[in-house]
Image (cartoon, rainbow, N blue to C red; front, side, top):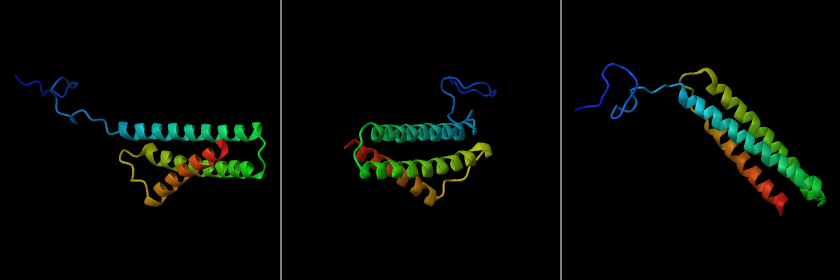
Length: 119
């Protein structure tokens, strides 16, 4: 006895994967992931700024917080552009390799500057 649905109704046990796939869900999940990542970068930048304000350590922490802010703003711009690209297209374009490298660079920079401020 087969459980495959032939009437196009909701998928049940044993239905073939992909029969009821909604192509709009993947871009939506990706947009939400970009928003979560942007939020975590914002929290990192704010905590780095808080660290500098509470512990006066000279010029190095001030430079690190400035670089952290620049890395965050660059990441925010890249993320916003990608979210916009994912916005209305049912099949959004693949992210450009240069943009992907820039996003990775911003993320690594935020991690390094954040670690520098903690030490």
